[in-house]
Each structure stands twice: as structure tokens, then as C-alpha cells.
Image (cartoon, rainbow, N blue to C red; front, side):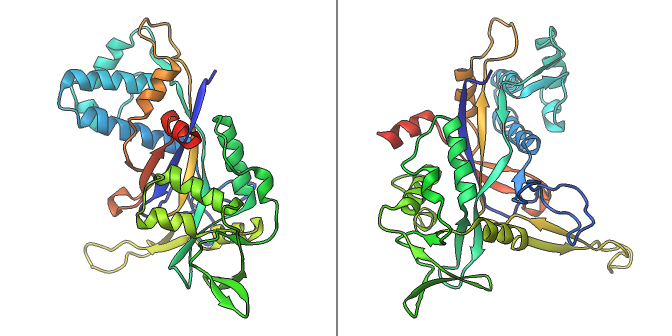
Length: 342
């Protein structure tokens, strides 16, 4: 039974490709998407594997003290699960880690971890704008699901799901992506023109933007990105949001060069889809007591404290050697929640 849940925000620093395999559609290698909405997502298994690797890199491979590295490796396997010494290549080379774990967990050849990670959902999608360079878009359905997920983590906000039932396209009161055209406030997103309603000061959209800015960045952060998040968020209809996240992702065409001729190898042309940089996603991370009878078993609180050591930057998905999938993380801790509600 999971006793605690906290949101984990993922901010794409570079384009992200978490693939769903080859496809017969227009794009050869599309990204993962929800079946019923077609919104981009990251499967929980893909995300959990990437996070585990990030923890191993930070707490084992980068730890010079062997005794600390061994202790950290045991904790990682308790938290993420253990499968008969199956480890990454680099970790195996460190102090014969596979044999060390087999001896440590000799009473159990495999067991489940006490961290559960949900699929990462898309929260904010960046779209090219004629004014302000780009804007983040979202929609009522995404916001309502986000609020429902926060409620699972027992987090309350100053805005509610009922605040976003309107079909009218809206933006914040401080938006800088609008052009006043014949008394209409219009935003030019890609090749489309949207007439938007500016929210009232401290209205529902303003509250949402402020909450995201304060929790993804901080209440005192005055950097470009934090300030932009508080100003340039647009609430579009569910249908328009779906169309943008379906048609406005990055599609890159790649090929393979024949080393002998220096020309394109026949039949090696293919296309890949990427979630653009500046996309914001989130996942819920849930914690339980360790699934074992060991005397030194971890409690859910211990596991959550351990997870707070999550690296600030992780690599998720394919084409790591091309600089893709660099993601900044923000884990919302209980302490930050207390400050927010103070």
C-alpha cells in the first residue's frame, strides 16, 4: 500500500524522443502518446528506468568512497526493485557489484521496489508565437487531470477544476504575446490566429500560472523562464490543444552515410518525432514501505527522503549521444508544500 505521493515535474531542456517503435504513419519513429487523447506521454517504465540510471550515476558511479557507494547501491535496489543482480554495464564494473548484491540479498533473488512512478503527462506545450517568441498552451482537460493528480498527493491549490469549464480561450492578465487588433486581443500561434480573453488580476488563469511558477521554479525566482511562465500561459479548447500537440511537434529527417562512398546509403532515410524543448510534463511518485522482512527495511518516509536526492538533470529517451532528452527535474517536497500553504 502506497502511503505517500508527490509530484515530479519534468522540463525539457532539449527535444525529447521517448519512442513507441516503428510506425506505418507519416513519421517512422513517433513518440509515445495516450491512446484515447493522443496527448504525448512518457510510459512509466521508460521514466522509472531513466531515473534509476540517474540515481546510480549520481550515488554510485560518482561516489569515490566504496563503502558509501555500496550503501547507496543497496538503497537504490531497495527503492527501485532488485532482479538477481541485473545492473547497468558501468555499475557492474564497480567493486563487482553484481556479486555484492547477490550476497546482500541472498534471501531474495528478486523483489519489487517501494517507489511507484506513473506515466508522465504533458502539462504545458510550447508553441511558436509572433509576439513573445513562444507561449505555453494547455487546456481544461489537462488542468482538471492535473488537479485530480495533485489531490491524490493531498495537495490543495487556490484554483479548482470547476474554474476551467469555459470554452473561451484565455490567457493571464500579464500576457505579452497578444496584439490589440480592432479592440480584439489576438495571439498568433504558428499560422493560426486566436482571439483571447485576458484574465482578471488574480483570476483563475493567473492563479494557475503563479502556482506553476512558484512550484516549478520558486516564489522569489525572477529569471526569464520563471517570469515568462507567470505571464505567457494560454488556455485553449481541448480540441485545439489536441491538434497542436499532434501537428506541432518536431519531426526530424535523418539518414545514414555509406562510409565507403561518402554518400547516402540506400533505404536509410527515416524520420523521428520529438517533443520540443521547453515542454513541461509531470508524474506522480508514490512511496511505500520496503517489501521485505529485513530488520533494516526502509519505511515510506525513508524512501521519500532518499528520492529527494534526485539529480537536477537527467537524460530520458533515445539519441542521448545527439544531446536529446536532457530534462530538468523538480520534485515537490513536503517542505515546499508547507511554504506554499503558509
